[in-house]
Length: 285
Image (cartoon, rainbow, N blue to C red; front, side):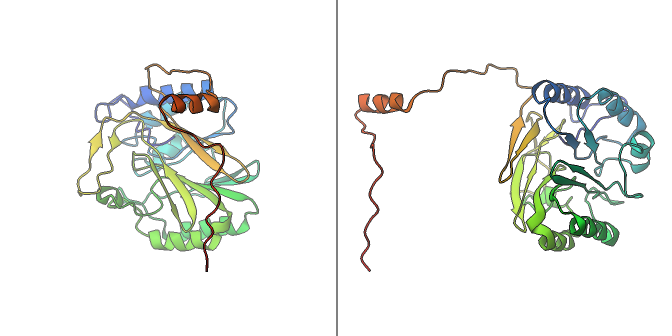
């Protein structure tokens, strides 16, 4: 889950009630995925960094049944965040980066916020910290960050990207074999890709969504619905499923059809479905 953009006063985010969307998302996850291992919220918890916004989130999470890992983004205020959640995690102060172990995985939570810009940066200290945590880990790593991990080709998004991407990528390259996936926020849109051989994915926000228009340098928004994702992680696979928790329409279910039904329906339309694979072509050399 990412980019809650909560406000202390209930102010709407481009016309969207982010508090209500966050409440619905948390309730939906609690109901449908109570067996999940943990929940991560990858930054921009607050829109203006108000203490009141963090207090609202504190109340929403007060009796939540899953471990919840919180991160900051460019909209968050470090001091106000710490005043409410400072005891929640073992932060590498003054940065809000930390790690935790869960089952066979090392979870790394990165702090990409930097002063004076909506973009992000690591700087030498945070890159050293990341390099050290990756070096010492004997577990596979799931990495979480607010800003997107590589340029996207969308000009407006990349103008608010990470200033030292190249240095970050060099750290990733040294440890790519043990990094299973990178989860990020910030872009307010569905996103998948890979960098240095590492897969990554991003999500929509709880407020206004960004349309990834690759032809303009302007920010493009559309009325997309918020969602969160569930990650199913196996020994050799990782699959994410986006959950459109505000959808109120019908969902039609029916028994799974037999392949013979497909064959018969094709035959009624004069189409023959082969019952054997073709023989490989013999190519003379």
